[in-house]
Amino acid sequence: AKSSKPKRGKGKSSKKKAKKVVKEVDILSPAAMLNAYYVCHNAAACLELRGFPWPGSPKKKGKKKSS
Image (tube, rainbow, N blue to C red):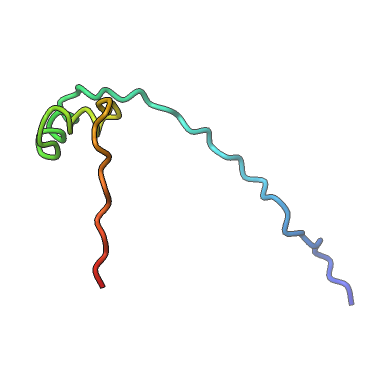
């Protein structure tokens, strides 16, 4: 006995993917500066967290898990 409904394969769905909108981020905005005030300890740490590392700066080592 065949059903009257057509079978659907497990192919790609027909939903359209939304394009990602890249928003320009201002690292000197009041919200970013407030965040930097509480997170960073000095100017070098602030710049490094913002993606501007100092040349020759020591690499930050991850915390070791103690078991």
